[in-house]
Amino acid sequence: MALESLEVEGVHFEASIISPRSASELILAGAGFRGVQIAPGVILKVTSIAIYIEKELLNQLANRWSGENSPALLENEEFFLEIVSAKFEKCAKVALLKPLTGIQYSEKVLEHTKAELGKRGDAEDKAIQEFLDAFKQETFFPGSAILLFVSPAGLTIAFSHESDTNPEIRAAATIDNRRFAEAVLATILGKHSVSPDAKASVARRISSRLSAGLQGSLS
Image (cartoon, helix red, strand yellow):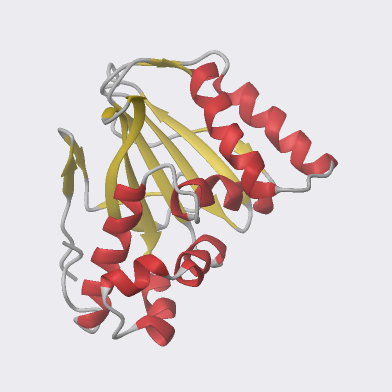
């Protein structure tokens, strides 16, 4: 099965990664940048984001979405909801283009995650605090990456710092709340995506893969 890596804003995203929670191989579904408007018509690119999925998820998607072109998939929120809520594991790999503290990153992510969650209970509030705790001692520089693994078991967080010499992905924290985990992923793949560029890449690459009968490369 041919797989292809991607490069976004100088960040290389490998064709596949291994989950530290399940040891499953996840393949690169798409990648793009996240930008923040700092003035009218001026976008500051702050992160590059890649989405990885289990291979088996492609088979599930093929049952419903084969034959759909990428613009049709991009406009169909049910397609992305199926990815977010599928029982298979997914990962968002967030590579830093600008320096950020862990507190800055986590608070910004939670701002959008809370909107995706809507009404919250004690379990979601506990997950939010655990998410904040996981990041409060961290500082990220360009070359660092944050990996957010989403599965029915919840969210697994891993960090890769620019100074790391060990390529193995190790879990730094786990949050056992599936609803919270899927809300985090929905901030990227949902209706109000923080990275329309990454979302469009996912639609384009998966459409190409399904059109090729699951035999073509994700390019």
